Image (cartoon, rainbow, N blue to C red; front, side, top):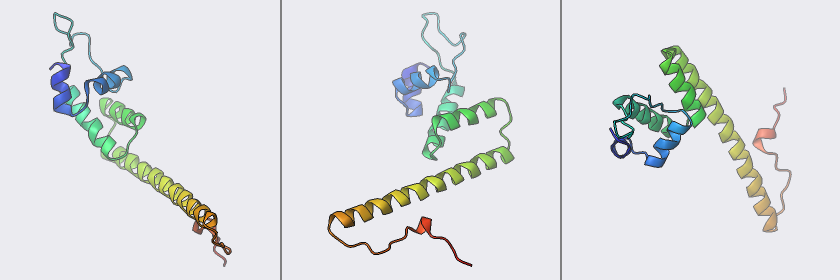
Length: 132
């Protein structure tokens, strides 16, 4: 299929498809060109683009998606590996959430101080130590 058809079927713009090709997320073989030198994308690339779309929707970065695609192409993406990838992503997201909550708390304190409120010994939850 030509890039316009692939764009409509995948939901990605032509520029995005070209970018993914440029960075190696999708690969077009030399034999996948028509006589007029137009690119003729095989249906496998559509499946890869749909997988990329789904993985982006789960919060995976393009580099993480590249790793998943390479593992799938090498037939090393079994359920145990997939489970590990998901677990690592969840840990990463939890870390990001913790950082964002800390930033939010600091900004709220700064806003309160700017409004003239007195802040009395507020200890951010993330900085509290449990005493035994």
